[in-house]
Amino acid sequence: MDIINILDRLETLVNSSKKVPYTNSAIIDRKKILDLLDQMRLNIPQEIKEASEILFQKDQIINTAVMEARASKSEAEAEFMSKLNQSALQQKAEELFADADRKTQKQIEQVTKECMAIRIEADSYALKSLRDLEQELTKISGSVRKGIELLAKNASNAQNNVISEQVAVNQAAD
Image 1: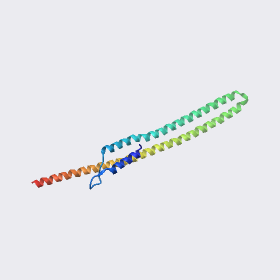
Image 2: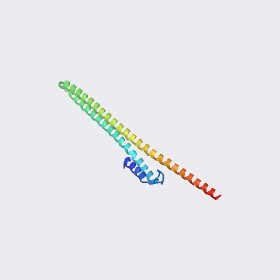
Image 3: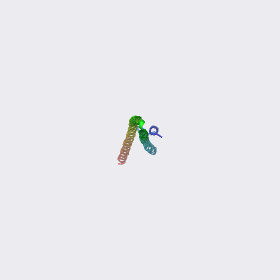
Image 4: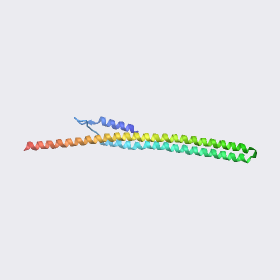
């Protein structure tokens, strides 16, 4: 279950809660809210895991490309040495080696560029995910803070009403 679905359920819980008469307050099942918050906590690391997986895949691509480039270079060097041993083909071997070296350098440059692009994309994704998460947590924190303030205010008003009624009863008894 993703975090958006959990937030929708949280909103539905708040909207479907019984309203306290003559106020903007509602009676909300505390256990249900705590369960939804726990589910959110469990879902948050998944987005971070996804960003980590993208970074891991980027590293694998880089490693594979470097291995291929090294293999290509080794093959080119082996071919060069073989050609070098043949005196009549020495010039051609040097040309092949230089060409292979240029191709290898181009491959390495291209792979490096691709890896940088993947890393930038992964970093952007991770940053966006974390910013979205921060916004959601800020919204939730604000809602919780408002609920606490409202409940505290209601409790204070109720306590003042009880005290006022006791004073009135005491005055009427005197």
